Length: 270
Image: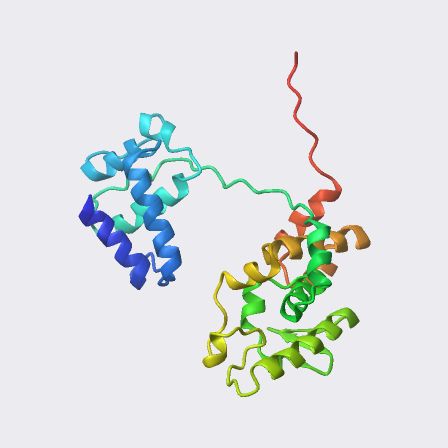
């Protein structure tokens, strides 16, 4: 099993040009998937399916015991694990080829803590105030906050990907205060990114993935979700408006508009 795990890990790290092709994963993703796969080998309901793959002798059907135990949240990932090994000819058969895998559960969009958002907007720390204002007013995510450049903000507008966002007055005030702080704190930095700290000011790389959450005191996606839900209430669930304002797909916008008409709870007869 170590050899099979090594092949799967190599495909994750370096990618695969053969069918099925895949791109190389970032280091954090590889570590998370490898940790989960090692855990599933030791314990868990997919141990029987893993044993089936190790023996490479049978193909599971929907009626076999392995099929009954594979209908778990980790089953889709296990299925991809088998496909990689089958494509690299490590396994002669894919034991999960006939398993019916359930779709991942979708969580309902929930509003954020308004007290925390207000605290961030009124914070004396100009970095936190500006970083809170962007997702609170315009629904930016953490990755967009990290990737913003100074040149992306021009003439009171934010040029983000293929969209041009007219910045709210409250956002412009906080960005101006932050830029004054940034120029005073690091007047000679060559970093082109908008948000920097004492380490990234010495180079040109963006801040780390954990830094926005540490500054905001919460995940940026929670503030973004609260902003989108507020727009859902204001527009009575206009999907087109959500797609234009926040750059989401119709499917993603439908997830937010579902809060207007939530599904009725299932009642069981007494």
